[in-house]
Length: 564
Image (cartoon, rainbow, N blue to C red):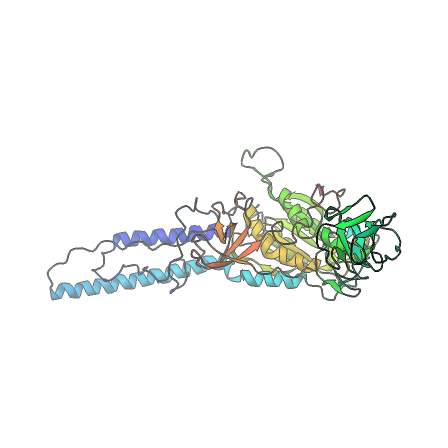
């Protein structure tokens, strides 16, 4: 969270000063004649001083119950000021009209000059802060996804079933046998042959017994669920649907339909059938299916290894915030979030604002993905960019046109920075793979934006999972937007609507803590009932939470994350 006075805040301050100057100019200028519009030319459809562009109209205003206005890099939508009231008309005089015309022209010239100057000032501020190089939000996600895609398909590595949970199949899962592999009883009852009543045989048939002898017409035998059906069986009668008289004769109390309550061989699948495609997530149900189909091991992708570096001298690890210092929210939040994306988190290290410590940590890291928090802007203690330049890393995404989370980044680390592989099978398995750094902003909700924008697509590629299917929902309320950037707003799903949550500032976690997802609000905002994309959270999407199985959120209940 270092470099707290972000580039976004500085830009907003510059725009505020510009607006104050314009307001002062309007107060001192002559009111316009009736019907001529305001002297600023800022009526509906005109360009705002922030350079949002003409012809777009004002962004939708937040709903009445929208709660507190967002903070930091979440500027509120510009609202046009009402024109001042017109002065009463005076008797027409040609020389007065001429003078008024000259005054109006001068006012317009002055205003045009000021507008040009404001536009130039805004552009200069944006150039200083690096805004023009920010990648559009959809393109940033596409770049991240491509970065995670393997150059060549990895050879399938058979892994024992208990170790495959939460990983992804690299080959199709095909049936090794028919399921079921023989005719079985679906219920406890009697296997009968021919029409009744039937003579009950003395011996019964239990599950797991070898092939029983055939039944003759008019015979019945007691049978358990899952037991093998005798040859020539007509049907299975449930225990509660028949009775045995004192002469050991079985009488059906309901109509007997041939084949009832018998699971025929290959009812579920035949040997060679594809049960699951490559890229399928191994869930507990998949483990059961694989075991039933005869598998002892599965071909799954290697789990990427991630390391979290928490930056910022202002962070506390325990107790209440005090004396200008705040609690670290990202250190506890990021590891389980990353594990829910299928990653093995090897360590969480707190480095403060130490440039040399950051460089050394990156140079020595053996992780496939390094995730940093804070330090991605251009403040005096923002050291991520200098460290990457020093390492010779390649910046793939340097800033994204999204709020919150504008100063996020994605870089490819050089292979030399990954260290050796001798004596470490996991590291050797990943030799030759690209290593990446995902730089998250220090504000908590901005960091969540970075996770969903850059980390999630990257990690989906690394673990071999297909891209998430787009999901949309109509908004229940208007949502104001940024003039140029995409906004990610926490929402809950109620009936058919996505309901925007009030606590959506960059530093706030209260909204995301109860959210079902994040709505993707396009530049300019979105109206009530407008369909918008909804980003699922790892624990809400189908097949999610696959890493949240042990007491510390890992697939291995005895593994530990090392905090340093």
